[in-house]
Length: 196
Image 1 (cartoon, rainbow, N blue to C red):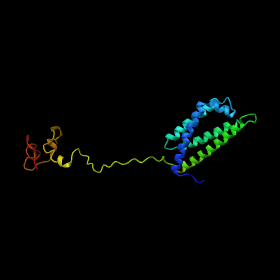
Image 2 (image 1 turned 60 degrees about the vertical axis):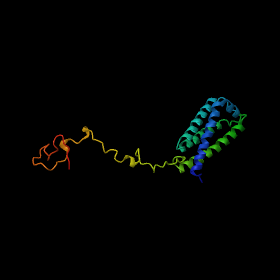
Image 3 (image 1 turned 180 degrees about the vertical axis):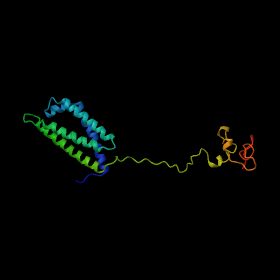
Image 4 (image 1 turned 30 degrees about the horizontal axis):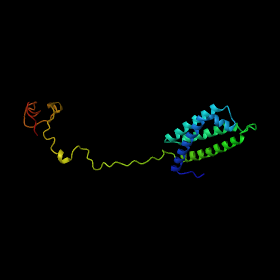
């Protein structure tokens, strides 16, 4: 079987999702009219429950990136609908012709569901999304001002005392024979800055 392309399958799934919601709303709002038209009175609560199922399935198809599972859920729902409609084919049902037409319609929609489900399974992956235009950051440096204005801005910066290297960890300075701290070899004399 030749399946539709990924874009066509996703569009078909979207259409089936909206159809499912529309059918579900009709079943929830007018179950008595539907059952009377089919000669299957007394099944209003069942039709209403099927309507809620259709609405949930439609929302699932439209909101999911992986609609295939929801489409296969529709196929299962179609089988359930056909089984329920088959009970209306009794010889004593005066609306038997309407039931036959409803069965044919459900079978047609079920075939669409199967084609869509197979196609989505073949082209598995998230549904195509609109591409967002990339923002060009090529002319940005990440600095608040141009480099010319920032040169020399930190020349007068003085490192806070608590951030300075402790004297015991400063490099040894050559120039003293004793090597004791504060005498030149082990560090600078108190109050002076080491120089290399």
